[in-house]
Length: 298
Image 1 (tube, rainbow, N blue to C red):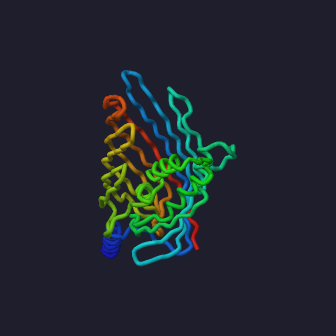
Image 2 (tube, rainbow, N blue to C red; image 1 turned 90 degrees about the horizontal axis):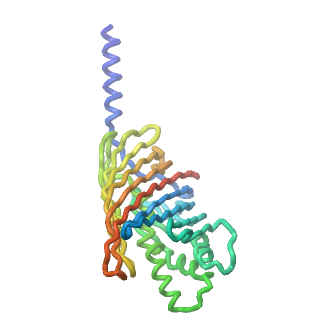
Image 3 (tube, one colour; image 1 turned 60 degrees about the horizontal axis):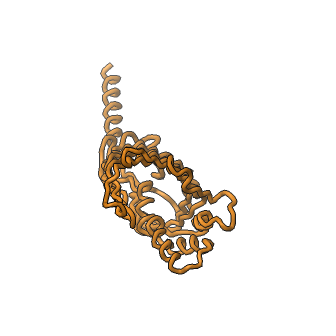
C-alpha cells in the first residue's frame, strides 16, 4: 500500500511539474515550408449624421501564401504573394460602392478591377522574427506599379495621386503593420500555461495586447485582449475611435503556425468633416475577422 501511495505521489508530482513547465513559444519552420492563409473580414461602420443613420458594410476576403526561403537564428525570410483579393463595399444610402474580385473575369474598362488584379501578379519579400514581429516588407513599389500598370489612367498627375493613396494601404509600412495583426503573437521569453505577456501593434490601428496561454498540448490555445485606437487622417476628414478587441487563437504546437484565429472588435468615437465646419460625426465600427491556414512542410 505504501508503495502504491508513493507511486501515486510521484506521478502527481511529475504531472504537476510538467503542467507548469515553461516553454518557448515561437515559429519553428524550415526552408520550403509554405503557409496558405484564408482571411475573411466583416466590418460595419455606423455614423449618426444629424439624426440620420448611415451604415456602410465592408466584406473582405483574401488568400495569401508565405514560403520560407531562408532561416536564421532569430528570423525567417519569406516570399509572399496574394492569390485572391475580394472586396464588397455597400451603403444603406448609396447602394453598392465598390465590388472587386480578382478571381472573376472583368471588363477591360473596369478601372478598379484592373488595378486590384495587379495584387496577384507581384511577389513580396518579408523578413519576420520568430515571435512574429515583422522586420521588413520589400517589393511594395513594384506591387503598386503593377496595380497601376493596367489601370488605363494616362494623366500623370492623377497617377501620382493614386500611387500616394495606395501607399497608405499597400506600402511597406502599411502591409507590415497589417500582417503583424496575424503573425505577431509570441513572447520573447519562456512561459507556462496560465502566463500572460504583452505586445503592441502600431500604425493606423494601434493595439496594446495582453495575451494568455490557456493550453499547450496538442494545440496552443491563446487568448488576447486589447485596448485599441483607430486614427485616420484623410484630405476630407479625420477619424479617431477607441475600443476593445478580443482574439482567440489555436496554433500548432510543433511549428507555431496559427490554425485558426478570430478577432472581434468594437470602436467608437468621431469622424470630423474637414469640408463642413469640422462637424463631429459620431461613428462606431464593429468588425469580425477570421483566419484559417494550411501548412505544407518540406
